Length: 365
Image 1 (cartoon, rainbow, N blue to C red):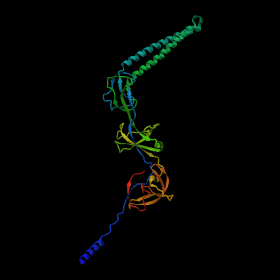
Image 2: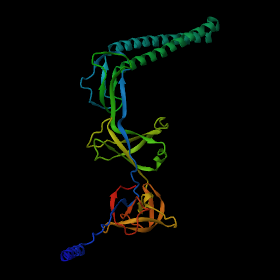
Image 3: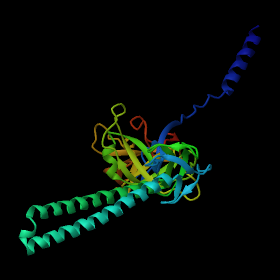
């Protein structure tokens, strides 16, 4: 019995002596980090909007009458400025013009007679005052002036008749494409009744709403561009066209309109959704820029630091840096850091020298 107990104890001691103590696995902390870049202005935030034509108008006639010319396939057609889109029957307006011109011709003849009679009466009065009277001269002068007034009135009537005849043509006020037709050919239409809708697609606009807290920074933006959802690989340069002067009462945003030339390889249609971006003016001059939350200053020091991450070893080291002015996408580092180095941007007060980390890229700024 004693021998058996001794054997069992020896086995236990042998097994215990051979087993190794488990190794402690080193913890690797995930941290958000970015590469120190140069201040290229940064795109910052983007704002959604929708495309609209540079000009868009519902065209109508200024006169009434039956349509005699309106292509059935007018929608989708492109027209040059001044080209006829539709036409009203001009016969009634031609008759009115001829009537006005006839009245004007008769009035001019009457004026010519009245002018002659006035001159003769005035000549007689000058040569022999007893042969006529001042009252008779004044009467002839009044008749002449009345005839002249009639001529002016009829000249205006003739011009109005000519204009009305011209208004029987509906012409494109600018180069554009017809996107809607509201009436059918041979239909009687009224003055100012909508006939077609014309869009100018030579340039494109997009309207975005900018918060009132950011509207004052618009002058600091030197480049704008737009990316439409339908064409995510196309970055279209844009220019600031118009800034609304009154904020929305509900959203406290200002409408800002950007304008751009349409790309040649894609077609941007009115109503397409997209996002507008802007690049702030550069201030760093090629020096490295990091997000402001990457920089920290210990309570007992006045020196600023960043945690620099060695990608090869996966460890962090505290680095002294000298801060410059704020940039569009962070703070400028004038000394202590090179563009391209990785710095931690979160948990900077809880890291320690030589700590193992794993980078979670969060993007710049």
